[in-house]
Length: 178
Image 1 (cartoon, rainbow, N blue to C red):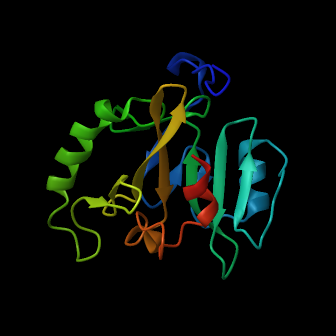
Image 2: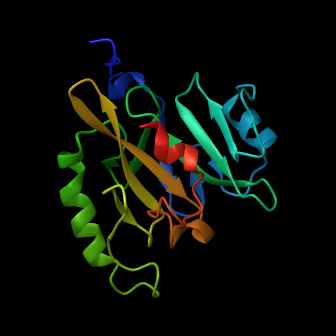
Image 3: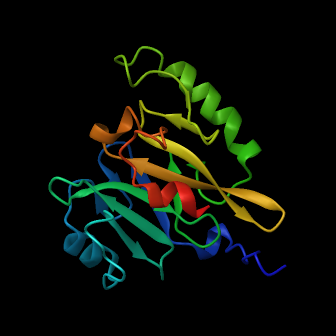
């Protein structure tokens, strides 16, 4: 099928750890696009400050920036070839959505005591689950006949509305691509 990409095995992907609201692998929320490029060891390609987006295609990572100061506020990981992002032993990238859903639901229950706006599970207009209390949106990326998980990890100030494709801070480009 022309629309199906080869899925890189977990062993062949860079292994990144996610620390909610702080970092995704070598990236720190709040970095400039130049700092992100340096941390990834890849030149910036396709940077458009008006769209708040810089792709790092070789690594399979899209980065999104705050409009006011152009600092890193979200990282989206390609489901087929991006780094494997781990959180407390849970692999977040490239999985079948049904494999990750039970963990999302159980984790949402443990976040019920978070401040209003960050507690529990959110389902966005696109039907994708999010955990604002951690800054995670479980996006899905179509690959042939299957969808795979494309995690979008956000900074605290973007967390509350992160699943909202209409009014939330994540640039429109992310919602329309996959």
